[in-house]
Length: 327
Image (cartoon, rainbow, N blue to C red; front, side, top):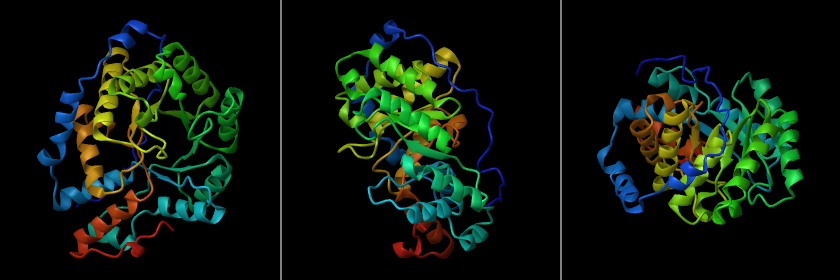
């Protein structure tokens, strides 16, 4: 396998500035559920990569993971260990056998009160990936509005370079697209230079058509990424939802020329699932989106399974899970 020093290319991508809310476009958006499900059902059966090609794709997947801890019992020690894992996600001997230079994950994602710990730890490790913070009353998004906006500002001041906000689901469920647009614009403005990922909580939006329309409205309001889930809903990232959101991104790019990122989150824990998502991105959006500036996995356990698959590739044996701890 060829060594590479650019697993995390520093692309100068213009941010999505958003646009005026176009209700004619929003109302015209539909979703053919049966066709979407047929397309997604064909993915895992038609696309397969093996051996060195699979290892290369899995290493690419690692560079697109937002390594995440969002638990009520998070401690500074846990976050420091997570940062260490993000800075060195695969054991050096495996990378050496593969003939690859070190990689890092795409980001570290934490609650607000762990931002400073994560920022300082990554700096101490000499790691350059950003810290992402969940915000706006995550996961329900039901705290007072002014507090949600101020929470974003506080997280940016604490050092977060990316903010994962949650939208008000009721705006989607009641078809109040103007309210959703105004909310997203306020959140985008509060982020300043920090990139904003809009979490749609797709499992709570009722229909794929609602997912498509909410995706479009959030992009019109200036979202840098659209994200499926908080990981706390009963239904999180799925392939049908992903296809709907990806095609909304494609339509927005065709109309405006601005590239918006995509982040599936929740329930993606196996290396084989990551490969399916990467193939979907490649086929629907193209190679430009296969980098951490435009695609991320929101995951914690996914990295461990990928590392197990890479060890199997170099040794021929599967290792125990405890050999690949998060820190």
